Image 1: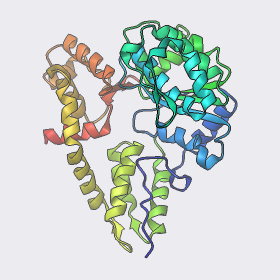
Image 2: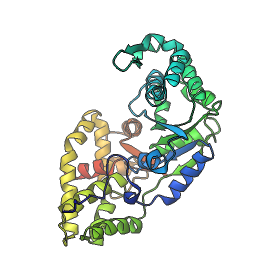
Image 3: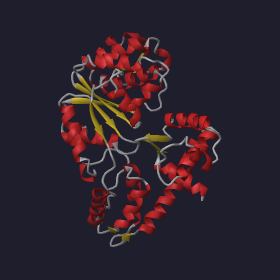
Image 4: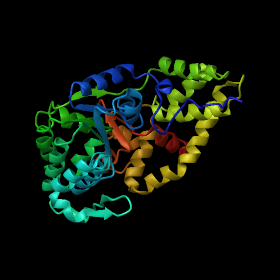
Length: 381
């Protein structure tokens, strides 16, 4: 019996046969990195930035393992410059230093400020690196050593920093300038600065008052066009003797505003519940969406538990609007949703934007996560 392979992949590297579209962005990112340029990649969260990068840099499929070393760092949950240095040091050790005894010796010799963090594994006969935040007493100097080591690496390095806008939220005020100073001196590495808060990323890279001004090529990842995505879904259903109605895919696409992760998750479930020779309709996908919202409810509740009452009120108010809100401080909006005051709304909005629960694009406010917006609306029904 032939084993059915679900073609809608939501975790791990996606094989090329199951990767939907992004032909233009793939060509751009591959060309920019091949030309040894830095890249800033922007989109809202869950739109597929990380998967696109993996797709372009998949050394196993592309046969480029001897050309470069890829290092991925997600700094979304970091809160300080020291944490950034800790993460960078750990990933450089794991992906670069451990590749050979020569690179390991060079690492221990170069990172003198962290010599106390090195141990020894008698079984593997190799040094170990157990870096803790408390070990980083001179983060600026340690960062300098890490970049010196990267420069001496025997292969070119591609360093992907996910949620790069997080550095603007550190208490230390000179992080951007420090990073820019070291990065511009590197000749053996390129960077992909990936970010989901587009306003912050644009300020960082397109304002002439910021250190990273015009220092990277720009790629903006928008939603995959519906027709392209529907053809992709229909093709894979038909490959396994199944079918799916266009309105079933349209319903999911519109509900989740084209956000790739959510589309793939629901299509994965739809493919699973549709028997061979069967057809998936809109009633089925609506039920799958409802089930998914229920599944995610504990996580969504936890997010709400971390914000204040006034911030919750503003989230609910924005979610009740039928379209993105132009002015959340207008008297009509405040009166309609019985908000306390203009100042209270402004204060709540500032925090919600920082927490990436609210987003502002083109002067309009909306809930950043379509899943959160759906859940908030369901609680009001």
